Image (cartoon, helix red, strand yellow):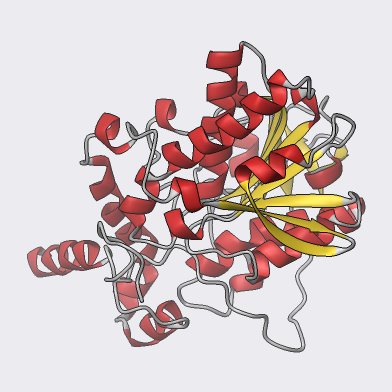
Length: 358
């Protein structure tokens, strides 16, 4: 038992990183002993707990970073796309325009599958969609990327503050964030409430990142907008398990792998990605993300929520409050889907305090 515990602790420490490779988790799943593979989620939890040892006030105290002046907003419209400075993006907004802005997560780019799926889906509903290009801040070691959440939030707050001064209605703003991007949206909402004494219209959080965000005061909360919807797909591992918003959607409950990821011995990346996939689908077809309200946490744990079937995701009504269970009807795809690189605890180059990897 002592040897097993030592091995587990060693791997938990190693889970702070491994060589960057698109299929690294799949490879590890094939070579790890069955015991370790079966308990991989627990190892990740132990590894991510190391982030909590960093003084949280220090980790989240920065308001500026060297990358902020060069950070851009990408505007997508039916005429194409254009990368703009934050000031230029603000100047092109009219008071009658609804602002829908997506904040990608760790190591995500404007051209990766998550961003493209979300933007393309939202473009079926809006004439334009904005994306905060987080590459300069988030394409770094994980802890460094986390420390860049507050600076990005202050940048976004400055953008919104000037809109507010020009008479733009903040109730028309919808921030959508995936993983780390969900916390950028939340921090921005906090700044709006604290400094402008008002609230954003809507925040949609797609599987908000759990590592480094265990403490409630340093993460997304329901007070950050008039309506906060959270879609949880990798609860308790890469994503936060506790309900955070007005409406919290649990994809296939709070335990086990997502059915779409059942063929993988280590399914973290795949589980995490289900949040943006389901939200994108719901923007195109509102019936694609239907769930039942749960009367209690115990009912949710049993995967037997008995409430009325409810439209969730993009078209979710702001009147819908509580916890909801969505159960997918999974069918094995004929072809493999593109892999999206998200939080990888076995990536030696991407967890520590490092700059952009080249």
